[in-house]
Length: 362
Image (tube, rainbow, N blue to C red):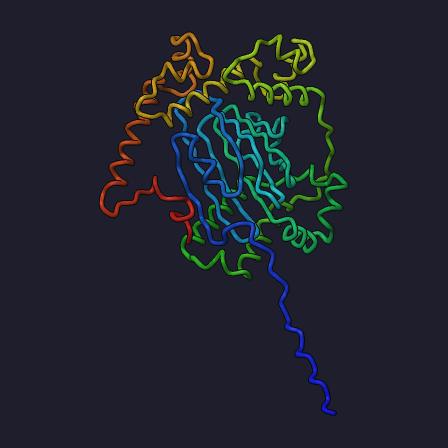
């Protein structure tokens, strides 16, 4: 009786590689004269901006990416509000650069050289009252844990439970130089950030810069009641921008007295509820005018956001943005006409109509 044919050996399938969080080799360097284009430049972020300082806006984002790390520098010429979420699957380190007295992170005044750490799902709340720069470093959680264990002999989770990450300090100016050096090197050598060995060494260098002063003990700060009041009131204001509530109605929503509400806003947002609401509504009108169609009128936009006195609206708008609503509208239409003319030209493609990935992939 013939022996049965043995079954074929099981095929060996190598373990699937973990998906890359970032487009390795992407270099982003954009300059903007309105905050409209900044969210698209920050790959993986989900954020919104509002102008808090008065005058014409100038902003920039410079960033580099390996498969596991995004390092970026963002700069603004005047006070800004930035709200939203950092890239998913990452631990994000935020380092304000410049006068710490003008910056609030997560509702608290920034500390010179201080590092704020956001874990996956944490919300970002950044505010500056004047020109500022912010270094952000987002690292894949597993990759970061490996670098931290190699550097400190500790697990990232242990450091978090012990509250040690709350006391991180680093040299912001050194981080700025490091990011700019990485961007220049990557632009000169397109393969630099896509080579896994080189990328790992660059990532380790970034993590070493963040943890260079790790000996500083961390302190755990419990969020105060005032911050919770301010955040709840702010969220409700954002949901009712087009129908401005009274201060009494806002106090009723958050169940506090008017005095407590004003104290919470002053301490955590650096302004009053009324002034903050006006700033948000003016920013919404500004964004609408920048995206206006051919038939859009300034008065329509003003009414959409609850401004019924057009003279005061124009005055407040000009004080905040450095130009009248009509000037913004005319500038937006001229820019739209220019883009339309470029797009209809034979084979034309300008930087303004090119996607970030197409323009800066190396």
